[in-house]
Image (cartoon, rainbow, N blue to C red; front, side, top):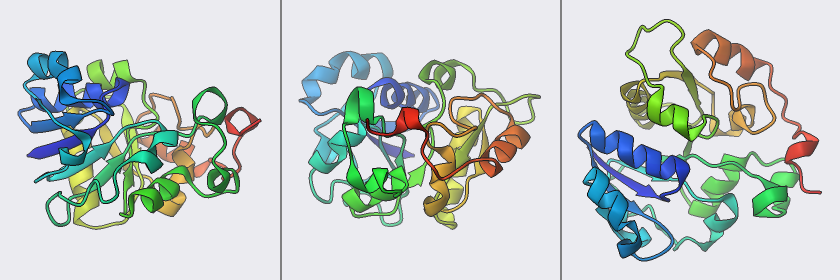
Length: 220
């Protein structure tokens, strides 16, 4: 499978390592020149590219950059992917330490709905609530007792099924997090965020979530 990854930080870099180890072809980009990713490319066999080229011919596109930088991406940056290729976004809104105030999110728009609007394409929210080192090291075979579950929010259909498949392949139980409009259940401050829960625990945590952002994750 051809996977394009825009962002090579903790999550983007980890997914580059994991997917190449599983035999997938990965094109990875950051906000700078491809030469700045030479070490990651040499380590993994991924191809370092400019961000505008990461999605070219991709079966799946992953956007893993700070929330505040999403509006700076080139218009149509995911449009060179194959028709129907799901676009995954992994990030969270951290207004105080990093992103500053984003009015629409502060006013109640779910983070990933806002990202989808900025990108001009539907997205799937996943990988936003797991510690990067656990994503790198804690995957286990299907059926393993206590296998960590990852919620996935987005529209039903073949794209979501492909995202489910990839999460399972990485060693985690995919759990349906509902529509993208329900992706607030996965946002920081809610019970599933940052917890290594099994599938049943993740479902309970999603059900217990509140759409109200906690004070810690609101702009001051």
